Image 1 (cartoon, rainbow, N blue to C red):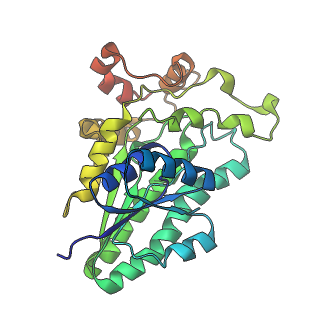
Image 2: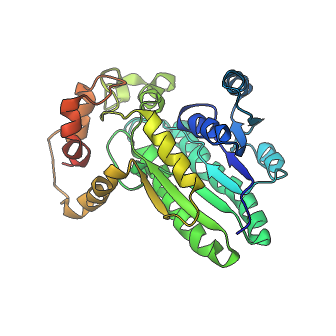
Length: 299
């Protein structure tokens, strides 16, 4: 197999994407770190310089056709579709423009960017496309329905794309991270502050809600994601951390057990936890011992 030369990672301006981009580049890999804004580009450039890491930084908004067309001129061996947003809130309350934005970024931007690079890779008969989905691509919870739905769509996209491209020698993989303390999840539960709606018509009081799960140290996820990216002939679906794999499977089974009248007139356990959870909370040792129960709880 020809040696892989260039990695393009989108959403490299913050969180796990930034960590993976810097981590790959620190190992001497040729990395194109794509960020959404010029401010992110400047910040990442400063951080890379401080760490003496050689990194090619490009501005790429995956929802902009002109940005995508410019990106297609880059020579890319591995595309890591990491860019994404999380606009939290109950499905009955989230305004239409926020729902559309959730899918424009996570689904349409990712698919349209992948299309162009997939055709290039298919013609060369080599290449890899990695889609960073989420644990919520395999399960759904209240208050994160829009985000989960967008990741469910990416799961279907990844499965179909993998089977379509297999005859052309192009590998497709999914990475499904659990919740990590990068600010991503906590910002999701503040997106309501930008809604242009009538607060009195909302079913939920978002000032009282927080991300309903403990969050892990992101350094572990960054290491795991880099290992997956660098591994040839790896698994199609990759849960990060691996310890959450049986939990993810259990979460998938939950809807099969639910009846139509389940929980009527009772508050869902996840909503209750959202009311009780402090923002940006790391798991204590006591919570770690009960982590399986917390993540697999379904009313």
